[in-house]
Image (cartoon, rainbow, N blue to C red; front, side):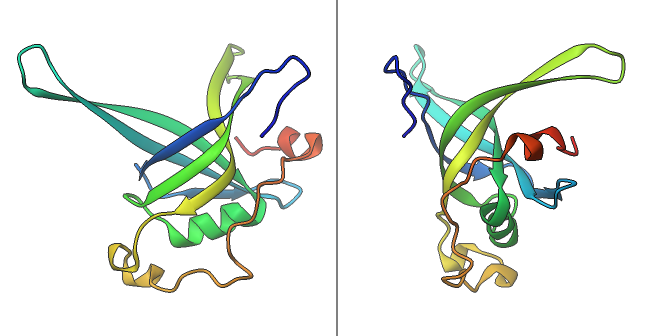
Amino acid sequence: MAYDSKGTVNKVILIGRLGADPELKYTQANAAVLNLRLATNTSWKGQDGNLQESTEWHNVVVWRKTAEVVSKYTKKGSRIYVEGKLTTRSWDDKDGNKRYTTEVLADQIQLLDTRGDRDTSYAQPPSADEAPAEFAEPSAQDSDDLPF
């Protein structure tokens, strides 16, 4: 867990389902980067006694070998566990306006679907060599050449 000298913590833990198929891309330095749309749901009883539900959407970014493995073994609807930290980045859009997005930079991902929940093309679990590794934060060079 990352602590700074002032005793603050930036830690996110999510369990949810992918709202779209993973988008795997590569930087100019050939580092794999995966973007995920993760949905988490909250439900409660309203004042009228009826069940209410709310869905929150999270942008998750996964890097390198973990990105490739997650891309290979997940699809829309897959259930995953994500640990990471919140990050905000900015860019200038085509009209020159400053844009911002807040994302979860994944440190660790676990695939939660059972074999029976997966499509047959995902039936084989990753080998020990392909198992998701701890996230290694991208270098400044890698994050400067993102394709998006």
